[in-house]
Image 1 (tube, rainbow, N blue to C red):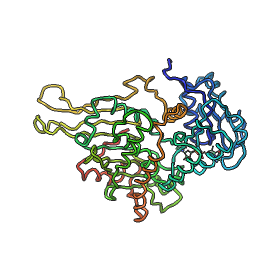
Image 2 (tube, rainbow, N blue to C red):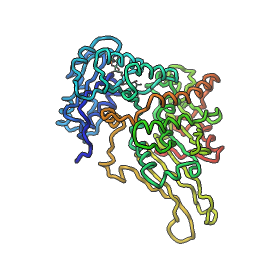
Image 3 (cartoon, rainbow, N blue to C red):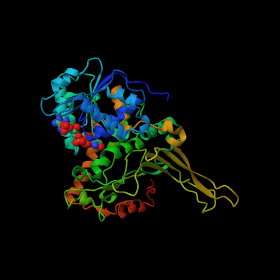
Image 4 (cartoon, protein in one colour):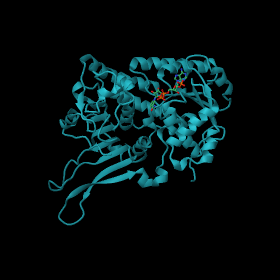
Length: 482
Ligand code: NAP
Protein backbone atom coordinates (compact mmCIF):
# COMPACT_ATOMS: atom_id res chain seq x y z
CA UNK A 1 0.00 0.00 0.00
CA UNK A 2 1.30 3.47 -0.86
CA UNK A 3 1.06 5.50 2.31
CA UNK A 4 -0.10 9.10 2.07
CA UNK A 5 0.81 9.95 5.62
CA UNK A 6 3.68 12.22 6.56
CA UNK A 7 5.79 10.98 9.47
CA UNK A 8 5.62 13.05 12.62
CA UNK A 9 8.67 14.39 14.46
CA UNK A 10 10.72 12.02 16.64
CA UNK A 11 9.15 11.59 20.06
CA UNK A 12 9.28 9.96 23.46
CA UNK A 13 5.73 9.10 24.48
CA UNK A 14 5.30 8.00 28.08
CA UNK A 15 2.04 6.27 28.89
CA UNK A 16 1.29 6.51 32.59
CA UNK A 17 -1.11 3.63 33.16
CA UNK A 18 0.60 1.79 30.31
CA UNK A 19 -0.55 -1.54 31.72
CA UNK A 20 -4.20 -0.49 32.03
CA UNK A 21 -7.30 -1.31 30.04
CA UNK A 22 -7.32 1.84 27.91
CA UNK A 23 -3.67 1.44 26.96
CA UNK A 24 -4.22 -2.22 26.07
CA UNK A 25 -7.38 -1.78 24.02
CA UNK A 26 -6.92 1.62 22.41
CA UNK A 27 -3.64 3.46 22.86
CA UNK A 28 -1.10 0.71 22.09
CA UNK A 29 -3.02 -0.87 19.16
CA UNK A 30 -3.59 2.65 17.80
CA UNK A 31 0.11 3.44 17.98
CA UNK A 32 0.92 0.22 16.16
CA UNK A 33 -1.52 1.11 13.37
CA UNK A 34 0.21 4.49 12.95
CA UNK A 35 3.53 2.66 12.78
CA UNK A 36 2.12 0.22 10.21
CA UNK A 37 0.92 3.17 8.17
CA UNK A 38 4.40 4.68 8.10
CA UNK A 39 3.62 7.69 10.25
CA UNK A 40 5.98 6.88 13.08
CA UNK A 41 9.57 8.04 12.60
CA UNK A 42 12.61 5.78 13.18
CA UNK A 43 13.48 7.60 16.39
CA UNK A 44 10.03 7.26 18.01
CA UNK A 45 9.89 5.59 21.41
CA UNK A 46 6.97 4.50 23.59
CA UNK A 47 7.53 4.03 27.30
CA UNK A 48 4.97 2.30 29.49
CA UNK A 49 4.87 3.49 33.10
CA UNK A 50 2.88 1.99 35.97
CA UNK A 51 3.57 0.66 39.45
CA UNK A 52 3.70 -3.03 38.47
CA UNK A 53 7.21 -4.41 38.52
CA UNK A 54 7.88 -5.62 35.01
CA UNK A 55 11.00 -5.70 32.89
CA UNK A 56 11.06 -4.29 29.38
CA UNK A 57 10.62 -7.76 27.84
CA UNK A 58 7.59 -8.38 30.02
CA UNK A 59 5.98 -5.13 28.88
CA UNK A 60 6.92 -5.77 25.27
CA UNK A 61 5.05 -9.07 25.51
CA UNK A 62 2.05 -7.19 26.97
CA UNK A 63 2.14 -4.79 24.00
CA UNK A 64 2.54 -7.64 21.50
CA UNK A 65 -0.52 -9.39 22.98
CA UNK A 66 -2.53 -6.15 22.91
CA UNK A 67 -1.68 -5.50 19.25
CA UNK A 68 -2.40 -9.08 18.25
CA UNK A 69 -5.76 -8.97 19.99
CA UNK A 70 -6.97 -5.55 18.84
CA UNK A 71 -5.42 -4.93 15.43
CA UNK A 72 -6.78 -6.65 12.34
CA UNK A 73 -4.76 -9.70 11.24
CA UNK A 74 -4.06 -8.05 7.89
CA UNK A 75 -1.89 -5.46 9.63
CA UNK A 76 -0.17 -7.80 12.08
CA UNK A 77 2.83 -8.50 9.86
CA UNK A 78 5.36 -10.24 12.12
CA UNK A 79 8.43 -8.29 10.89
CA UNK A 80 6.67 -4.98 11.34
CA UNK A 81 5.36 -5.99 14.72
CA UNK A 82 8.91 -6.91 15.81
CA UNK A 83 10.16 -3.51 14.66
CA UNK A 84 7.37 -1.79 16.56
CA UNK A 85 8.08 -3.80 19.69
CA UNK A 86 11.69 -2.61 19.45
CA UNK A 87 10.42 0.89 20.21
CA UNK A 88 8.79 -0.15 23.48
CA UNK A 89 10.31 0.41 26.88
CA UNK A 90 8.95 0.20 30.42
CA UNK A 91 9.71 1.87 33.72
CA UNK A 92 8.01 0.99 37.00
CA UNK A 93 6.89 4.36 38.39
CA UNK A 94 4.70 5.27 41.32
CA UNK A 95 2.75 8.41 40.48
CA UNK A 96 2.20 9.15 44.14
CA UNK A 97 5.70 8.40 45.40
CA UNK A 98 9.25 8.82 44.16
CA UNK A 99 9.93 5.25 43.00
CA UNK A 100 11.02 5.03 39.40
CA UNK A 101 11.10 8.76 38.61
CA UNK A 102 14.90 9.08 38.52
CA UNK A 103 15.05 6.13 36.19
CA UNK A 104 12.37 7.60 33.92
CA UNK A 105 14.19 10.95 33.91
CA UNK A 106 17.38 9.11 32.99
CA UNK A 107 15.97 7.62 29.80
CA UNK A 108 14.06 10.65 28.46
CA UNK A 109 15.94 12.11 25.48
CA UNK A 110 16.63 15.74 24.67
CA UNK A 111 15.81 17.09 21.25
CA UNK A 112 12.65 15.02 20.70
CA UNK A 113 8.99 15.79 21.42
CA UNK A 114 8.12 14.68 24.94
CA UNK A 115 4.51 13.61 25.37
CA UNK A 116 3.02 12.24 28.57
CA UNK A 117 -0.27 10.39 28.34
CA UNK A 118 -2.10 10.33 31.69
CA UNK A 119 -4.04 7.09 31.20
CA UNK A 120 -4.71 6.82 34.91
CA UNK A 121 -7.46 7.97 37.24
CA UNK A 122 -7.85 11.78 37.50
CA UNK A 123 -6.78 11.62 41.17
CA UNK A 124 -3.23 11.06 39.87
CA UNK A 125 -3.11 13.90 37.33
CA UNK A 126 -1.79 16.48 39.78
CA UNK A 127 0.84 14.11 41.23
CA UNK A 128 2.19 13.23 37.82
CA UNK A 129 2.18 16.83 36.57
CA UNK A 130 4.11 17.95 39.66
CA UNK A 131 6.70 15.17 39.39
CA UNK A 132 7.33 15.77 35.71
CA UNK A 133 8.65 19.15 36.75
CA UNK A 134 10.33 18.05 39.93
CA UNK A 135 12.33 15.50 37.98
CA UNK A 136 12.99 17.98 35.23
CA UNK A 137 11.50 16.11 32.32
CA UNK A 138 8.90 18.62 31.20
CA UNK A 139 10.43 21.33 29.06
CA UNK A 140 8.36 24.13 27.53
CA UNK A 141 7.58 22.00 24.54
CA UNK A 142 6.40 18.95 26.52
CA UNK A 143 2.74 17.93 26.19
CA UNK A 144 0.40 16.15 28.54
CA UNK A 145 -2.67 14.21 27.45
CA UNK A 146 -5.49 13.82 29.94
CA UNK A 147 -8.37 11.39 29.76
CA UNK A 148 -11.99 11.72 30.68
CA UNK A 149 -13.66 12.14 33.07
CA UNK A 150 -12.43 15.72 33.32
CA UNK A 151 -14.00 16.55 36.64
CA UNK A 152 -17.27 15.44 38.19
CA UNK A 153 -18.82 18.92 38.15
CA UNK A 154 -17.77 22.52 37.64
CA UNK A 155 -15.98 22.77 40.95
CA UNK A 156 -13.82 19.67 40.43
CA UNK A 157 -13.14 20.56 36.77
CA UNK A 158 -11.94 24.00 37.88
CA UNK A 159 -9.74 22.45 40.54
CA UNK A 160 -8.27 20.04 37.98
CA UNK A 161 -7.63 22.85 35.53
CA UNK A 162 -5.97 24.88 38.26
CA UNK A 163 -3.75 21.96 39.29
CA UNK A 164 -2.61 21.32 35.73
CA UNK A 165 -2.10 25.05 35.16
CA UNK A 166 0.37 25.15 38.07
CA UNK A 167 2.71 23.04 36.00
CA UNK A 168 1.71 23.38 32.34
CA UNK A 169 0.55 26.12 29.99
CA UNK A 170 -2.82 25.64 28.29
CA UNK A 171 -0.98 25.11 24.99
CA UNK A 172 0.65 22.03 26.51
CA UNK A 173 -2.55 20.41 27.80
CA UNK A 174 -4.46 18.02 25.52
CA UNK A 175 -7.84 17.04 26.99
CA UNK A 176 -9.04 14.07 25.00
CA UNK A 177 -12.59 13.61 23.84
CA UNK A 178 -12.23 10.71 21.47
CA UNK A 179 -15.46 11.66 19.65
CA UNK A 180 -13.54 14.58 18.19
CA UNK A 181 -11.06 12.15 16.67
CA UNK A 182 -13.71 10.40 14.62
CA UNK A 183 -13.44 10.83 10.90
CA UNK A 184 -17.07 11.81 10.40
CA UNK A 185 -16.94 14.44 13.09
CA UNK A 186 -14.17 16.18 11.20
CA UNK A 187 -16.08 15.59 8.02
CA UNK A 188 -18.94 17.53 9.53
CA UNK A 189 -16.66 20.56 9.44
CA UNK A 190 -15.49 19.72 5.91
CA UNK A 191 -19.09 19.45 4.70
CA UNK A 192 -20.22 22.62 6.41
CA UNK A 193 -17.28 24.84 5.58
CA UNK A 194 -15.88 23.22 2.43
CA UNK A 195 -19.08 23.41 0.36
CA UNK A 196 -21.32 26.24 -0.74
CA UNK A 197 -24.32 23.95 -0.63
CA UNK A 198 -25.02 23.54 3.07
CA UNK A 199 -23.84 26.55 5.05
CA UNK A 200 -26.36 29.05 3.60
CA UNK A 201 -29.16 26.70 4.72
CA UNK A 202 -27.60 25.86 8.09
CA UNK A 203 -29.83 28.04 10.26
CA UNK A 204 -33.27 28.39 11.78
CA UNK A 205 -34.78 29.66 8.56
CA UNK A 206 -34.21 26.36 6.78
CA UNK A 207 -33.54 23.78 9.49
CA UNK A 208 -36.58 22.45 11.32
CA UNK A 209 -34.65 20.69 14.05
CA UNK A 210 -31.53 18.67 14.77
CA UNK A 211 -31.27 15.29 16.48
CA UNK A 212 -28.12 13.96 18.08
CA UNK A 213 -28.20 10.32 19.13
CA UNK A 214 -25.60 8.21 20.88
CA UNK A 215 -27.22 4.84 21.57
CA UNK A 216 -25.38 1.84 22.94
CA UNK A 217 -26.56 -1.76 23.14
CA UNK A 218 -24.28 -2.60 26.05
CA UNK A 219 -25.31 -2.02 29.63
CA UNK A 220 -23.16 -0.76 32.48
CA UNK A 221 -22.12 -4.26 33.60
CA UNK A 222 -18.49 -4.34 34.71
CA UNK A 223 -18.25 -0.56 35.06
CA UNK A 224 -21.18 -0.37 37.49
CA UNK A 225 -19.35 1.27 40.33
CA UNK A 226 -17.96 4.08 38.16
CA UNK A 227 -21.09 4.52 36.09
CA UNK A 228 -23.46 4.73 39.01
CA UNK A 229 -21.58 7.78 40.29
CA UNK A 230 -21.68 9.30 36.85
CA UNK A 231 -24.83 8.51 34.81
CA UNK A 232 -25.58 9.33 31.18
CA UNK A 233 -25.54 13.08 31.74
CA UNK A 234 -21.97 13.17 33.03
CA UNK A 235 -20.67 10.22 31.05
CA UNK A 236 -22.03 11.20 27.64
CA UNK A 237 -23.88 14.51 27.46
CA UNK A 238 -21.49 16.88 29.23
CA UNK A 239 -18.58 15.84 27.03
CA UNK A 240 -19.20 13.85 23.83
CA UNK A 241 -22.68 15.07 22.96
CA UNK A 242 -21.84 18.62 23.89
CA UNK A 243 -18.92 18.48 21.46
CA UNK A 244 -21.13 17.15 18.68
CA UNK A 245 -23.68 19.86 19.40
CA UNK A 246 -20.97 22.53 19.28
CA UNK A 247 -19.55 21.41 15.95
CA UNK A 248 -23.05 21.27 14.47
CA UNK A 249 -24.20 24.62 15.82
CA UNK A 250 -21.06 26.77 15.77
CA UNK A 251 -20.42 29.74 13.50
CA UNK A 252 -17.77 29.30 10.81
CA UNK A 253 -14.37 29.82 12.44
CA UNK A 254 -12.13 32.24 10.57
CA UNK A 255 -9.44 29.58 10.23
CA UNK A 256 -9.13 25.88 10.94
CA UNK A 257 -6.83 26.50 13.84
CA UNK A 258 -7.14 25.41 17.46
CA UNK A 259 -8.22 28.64 19.09
CA UNK A 260 -10.43 29.83 16.23
CA UNK A 261 -12.39 26.54 16.33
CA UNK A 262 -12.52 26.32 20.11
CA UNK A 263 -13.63 29.94 20.47
CA UNK A 264 -16.64 29.18 18.28
CA UNK A 265 -17.49 26.01 20.20
CA UNK A 266 -17.29 27.90 23.48
CA UNK A 267 -19.75 30.51 22.18
CA UNK A 268 -22.28 27.75 21.49
CA UNK A 269 -22.04 26.35 25.01
CA UNK A 270 -22.42 29.83 26.45
CA UNK A 271 -25.50 30.38 24.30
CA UNK A 272 -27.31 27.30 25.62
CA UNK A 273 -30.46 28.12 27.52
CA UNK A 274 -31.09 26.34 30.81
CA UNK A 275 -33.19 23.26 30.11
CA UNK A 276 -36.65 23.14 31.66
CA UNK A 277 -37.43 19.91 33.56
CA UNK A 278 -40.34 19.25 31.15
CA UNK A 279 -37.82 19.13 28.32
CA UNK A 280 -35.78 16.32 29.86
CA UNK A 281 -36.52 12.62 30.17
CA UNK A 282 -34.31 10.40 32.29
CA UNK A 283 -34.46 6.65 32.04
CA UNK A 284 -33.05 3.52 33.59
CA UNK A 285 -33.24 0.10 31.94
CA UNK A 286 -35.21 -2.43 33.90
CA UNK A 287 -35.91 -5.95 32.82
CA UNK A 288 -35.77 -9.46 34.13
CA UNK A 289 -32.20 -10.72 34.05
CA UNK A 290 -30.97 -7.45 32.63
CA UNK A 291 -31.64 -4.81 35.20
CA UNK A 292 -29.58 -1.66 35.79
CA UNK A 293 -29.92 -2.29 39.50
CA UNK A 294 -28.29 -5.71 39.12
CA UNK A 295 -25.27 -4.04 37.55
CA UNK A 296 -24.61 -1.53 40.29
CA UNK A 297 -23.97 -1.74 44.00
CA UNK A 298 -26.74 0.63 45.03
CA UNK A 299 -29.99 -1.27 44.61
CA UNK A 300 -32.04 1.88 45.10
CA UNK A 301 -29.98 3.80 42.54
CA UNK A 302 -31.57 6.86 40.95
CA UNK A 303 -28.81 7.19 38.32
CA UNK A 304 -29.94 7.52 34.72
CA UNK A 305 -28.70 5.16 32.03
CA UNK A 306 -30.68 7.16 29.46
CA UNK A 307 -31.35 10.82 28.91
CA UNK A 308 -33.22 12.71 26.22
CA UNK A 309 -33.59 16.46 26.10
CA UNK A 310 -34.68 19.41 24.05
CA UNK A 311 -32.12 22.18 23.93
CA UNK A 312 -32.26 25.73 22.65
CA UNK A 313 -29.21 27.56 21.38
CA UNK A 314 -30.10 31.16 22.07
CA UNK A 315 -28.56 33.08 19.20
CA UNK A 316 -29.64 34.51 15.85
CA UNK A 317 -28.71 31.45 13.88
CA UNK A 318 -30.72 28.94 15.86
CA UNK A 319 -33.62 30.92 17.28
CA UNK A 320 -36.63 28.58 17.07
CA UNK A 321 -34.75 25.47 15.93
CA UNK A 322 -34.53 22.93 18.75
CA UNK A 323 -31.73 20.42 19.20
CA UNK A 324 -32.93 17.07 20.52
CA UNK A 325 -30.30 14.93 22.23
CA UNK A 326 -30.68 11.34 23.37
CA UNK A 327 -28.26 8.79 24.70
CA UNK A 328 -28.74 5.51 26.45
CA UNK A 329 -27.41 2.12 27.32
CA UNK A 330 -29.05 -1.23 26.50
CA UNK A 331 -30.84 0.31 23.55
CA UNK A 332 -32.19 -1.44 20.51
CA UNK A 333 -29.23 -0.59 18.29
CA UNK A 334 -25.73 0.84 18.52
CA UNK A 335 -25.99 4.10 16.64
CA UNK A 336 -24.26 7.47 16.89
CA UNK A 337 -25.52 10.06 14.48
CA UNK A 338 -26.43 13.66 13.92
CA UNK A 339 -29.56 14.30 11.88
CA UNK A 340 -30.24 17.72 10.38
CA UNK A 341 -33.88 17.83 9.39
CA UNK A 342 -34.60 20.66 6.95
CA UNK A 343 -37.97 22.36 6.68
CA UNK A 344 -40.51 21.34 4.11
CA UNK A 345 -40.75 23.54 1.01
CA UNK A 346 -42.97 26.52 1.86
CA UNK A 347 -45.49 25.75 -0.85
CA UNK A 348 -46.19 22.56 -2.73
CA UNK A 349 -46.95 22.88 -6.42
CA UNK A 350 -47.99 19.26 -6.51
CA UNK A 351 -51.30 17.79 -5.57
CA UNK A 352 -51.76 16.74 -2.02
CA UNK A 353 -50.60 13.29 -1.00
CA UNK A 354 -47.74 13.13 -3.43
CA UNK A 355 -45.54 11.91 -0.60
CA UNK A 356 -43.34 14.99 -0.54
CA UNK A 357 -41.36 15.40 2.67
CA UNK A 358 -38.33 17.23 4.01
CA UNK A 359 -34.65 16.74 3.29
CA UNK A 360 -32.57 15.09 5.96
CA UNK A 361 -28.81 15.11 6.28
CA UNK A 362 -27.50 12.34 8.52
CA UNK A 363 -23.93 12.30 9.72
CA UNK A 364 -23.21 8.80 11.01
CA UNK A 365 -20.41 8.27 13.48
CA UNK A 366 -21.10 4.59 13.96
CA UNK A 367 -21.63 2.07 12.61
CA UNK A 368 -20.57 2.57 8.97
CA UNK A 369 -19.14 6.07 9.25
CA UNK A 370 -20.55 8.22 6.50
CA UNK A 371 -23.20 10.68 5.44
CA UNK A 372 -26.58 10.36 3.95
CA UNK A 373 -28.78 13.04 2.40
CA UNK A 374 -32.35 12.32 1.48
CA UNK A 375 -33.72 14.19 -1.50
CA UNK A 376 -37.18 14.11 -2.95
CA UNK A 377 -37.56 12.94 -6.54
CA UNK A 378 -40.31 11.74 -8.80
CA UNK A 379 -41.05 8.08 -8.50
CA UNK A 380 -40.05 6.66 -11.87
CA UNK A 381 -42.75 5.39 -14.23
CA UNK A 382 -46.22 6.40 -15.30
CA UNK A 383 -49.08 7.18 -12.96
CA UNK A 384 -48.71 10.89 -12.38
CA UNK A 385 -46.48 12.89 -10.13
CA UNK A 386 -45.72 10.73 -7.13
CA UNK A 387 -42.74 11.80 -5.07
CA UNK A 388 -40.36 9.62 -3.12
CA UNK A 389 -37.42 10.32 -0.85
CA UNK A 390 -34.21 8.68 -1.95
CA UNK A 391 -30.92 8.62 -0.09
CA UNK A 392 -27.74 10.04 -1.54
CA UNK A 393 -25.64 7.70 0.53
CA UNK A 394 -21.97 8.34 1.12
CA UNK A 395 -20.81 5.51 3.30
CA UNK A 396 -17.04 5.94 3.25
CA UNK A 397 -16.39 2.26 2.63
CA UNK A 398 -18.56 2.33 -0.48
CA UNK A 399 -17.74 5.78 -1.81
CA UNK A 400 -14.00 5.72 -1.30
CA UNK A 401 -13.19 2.03 -1.44
CA UNK A 402 -12.34 -0.20 1.51
CA UNK A 403 -8.71 0.92 1.59
CA UNK A 404 -9.48 4.63 1.81
CA UNK A 405 -12.28 3.96 4.24
CA UNK A 406 -9.86 2.17 6.53
CA UNK A 407 -9.52 5.39 8.44
CA UNK A 408 -7.47 5.76 11.59
CA UNK A 409 -9.26 5.11 14.83
CA UNK A 410 -10.00 8.22 16.89
CA UNK A 411 -7.27 7.54 19.45
CA UNK A 412 -4.46 7.05 16.99
CA UNK A 413 -5.35 10.21 15.10
CA UNK A 414 -5.49 12.24 18.30
CA UNK A 415 -2.18 10.91 19.63
CA UNK A 416 -0.48 11.89 16.37
CA UNK A 417 -2.05 15.35 16.71
CA UNK A 418 -0.43 15.61 20.13
CA UNK A 419 2.97 14.85 18.64
CA UNK A 420 2.32 17.38 15.86
CA UNK A 421 1.30 19.94 18.48
CA UNK A 422 -2.16 20.46 17.01
CA UNK A 423 -4.81 21.15 19.66
CA UNK A 424 -7.77 21.73 17.32
CA UNK A 425 -9.47 18.45 18.25
CA UNK A 426 -8.86 18.75 21.99
CA UNK A 427 -11.01 20.52 24.54
CA UNK A 428 -9.76 23.74 26.03
CA UNK A 429 -10.10 24.27 29.78
CA UNK A 430 -12.71 27.02 29.45
CA UNK A 431 -14.85 24.82 27.16
CA UNK A 432 -14.92 22.03 29.71
CA UNK A 433 -15.82 24.44 32.48
CA UNK A 434 -18.59 26.03 30.42
CA UNK A 435 -20.06 22.61 29.68
CA UNK A 436 -20.11 21.77 33.39
CA UNK A 437 -21.61 25.16 34.22
CA UNK A 438 -24.52 24.26 31.95
CA UNK A 439 -24.80 20.65 33.17
CA UNK A 440 -24.51 21.19 36.93
CA UNK A 441 -27.89 22.90 37.55
CA UNK A 442 -29.69 20.15 35.63
CA UNK A 443 -28.13 17.44 37.77
CA UNK A 444 -28.60 19.51 40.94
CA UNK A 445 -32.31 19.77 40.14
CA UNK A 446 -32.63 15.99 39.84
CA UNK A 447 -30.78 15.45 43.10
CA UNK A 448 -32.89 18.03 44.91
CA UNK A 449 -36.14 16.50 43.71
CA UNK A 450 -34.82 12.94 44.13
CA UNK A 451 -35.96 12.47 40.58
CA UNK A 452 -36.69 8.86 39.72
CA UNK A 453 -35.69 7.83 36.19
CA UNK A 454 -38.45 6.35 34.02
CA UNK A 455 -37.90 2.69 33.36
CA UNK A 456 -37.40 1.27 29.90
CA UNK A 457 -37.08 -2.22 28.51
CA UNK A 458 -33.55 -3.32 27.70
CA UNK A 459 -33.24 -3.55 23.92
CA UNK A 460 -35.88 -0.87 23.34
CA UNK A 461 -35.74 2.71 22.07
CA UNK A 462 -35.91 4.17 25.58
CA UNK A 463 -38.76 5.36 27.81
CA UNK A 464 -42.13 6.15 26.29
CA UNK A 465 -41.85 9.71 27.63
CA UNK A 466 -38.87 10.36 25.36
CA UNK A 467 -41.05 9.66 22.32
CA UNK A 468 -43.54 12.18 23.67
CA UNK A 469 -40.81 14.81 23.98
CA UNK A 470 -40.80 15.08 20.18
CA UNK A 471 -44.35 13.98 19.62
CA UNK A 472 -45.73 17.00 21.44
CA UNK A 473 -43.76 19.19 19.01
CA UNK A 474 -45.20 17.30 16.03
CA UNK A 475 -41.90 15.53 15.39
CA UNK A 476 -40.45 12.08 15.88
CA UNK A 477 -37.10 10.51 16.55
CA UNK A 478 -35.37 8.97 13.61
CA UNK A 479 -35.69 5.21 13.80
CA UNK A 480 -32.80 3.53 15.62
CA UNK A 481 -31.32 1.47 12.81
CA UNK A 482 -28.01 -0.32 13.15
P1 NAP B 1 -7.15 0.75 34.58
O1 NAP B 1 -7.32 -0.42 33.69
O2 NAP B 1 -7.60 0.64 36.01
O3 NAP B 1 -5.60 1.11 34.57
C1 NAP B 1 -5.04 2.04 35.45
C2 NAP B 1 -3.54 2.11 35.17
O4 NAP B 1 -2.97 3.05 36.07
C3 NAP B 1 -2.82 0.81 35.36
O5 NAP B 1 -1.80 0.70 34.38
C4 NAP B 1 -2.19 0.97 36.75
O6 NAP B 1 -1.09 0.14 36.83
C5 NAP B 1 -1.85 2.44 36.71
N1 NAP B 1 -1.71 3.04 38.03
C6 NAP B 1 -2.61 3.03 39.05
N2 NAP B 1 -2.12 3.69 40.12
C7 NAP B 1 -0.88 4.14 39.77
C8 NAP B 1 0.15 4.86 40.43
N3 NAP B 1 0.03 5.28 41.73
N4 NAP B 1 1.28 5.13 39.77
C9 NAP B 1 1.45 4.73 38.49
N5 NAP B 1 0.53 4.03 37.82
C10 NAP B 1 -0.62 3.73 38.45
O7 NAP B 1 -7.84 2.05 34.00
P2 NAP B 1 -8.20 2.37 32.47
O8 NAP B 1 -9.51 1.75 32.15
O9 NAP B 1 -7.04 2.03 31.62
O10 NAP B 1 -8.44 3.93 32.54
C11 NAP B 1 -7.40 4.87 32.62
C12 NAP B 1 -8.00 6.28 32.54
O11 NAP B 1 -8.64 6.44 31.28
C13 NAP B 1 -9.08 6.57 33.58
O12 NAP B 1 -9.03 7.93 33.91
C14 NAP B 1 -10.37 6.28 32.84
O13 NAP B 1 -11.46 7.01 33.35
C15 NAP B 1 -10.01 6.76 31.46
N6 NAP B 1 -10.78 6.14 30.38
C16 NAP B 1 -10.77 4.80 30.21
C17 NAP B 1 -11.49 4.25 29.16
C18 NAP B 1 -11.48 2.75 28.90
O14 NAP B 1 -12.09 2.34 27.91
N7 NAP B 1 -10.82 1.96 29.70
C19 NAP B 1 -12.24 5.07 28.30
C20 NAP B 1 -12.22 6.45 28.49
C21 NAP B 1 -11.48 6.97 29.54
P3 NAP B 1 -0.47 -0.37 38.24
O15 NAP B 1 -1.60 -0.91 39.04
O16 NAP B 1 0.55 -1.37 37.84
O17 NAP B 1 0.15 0.81 38.85
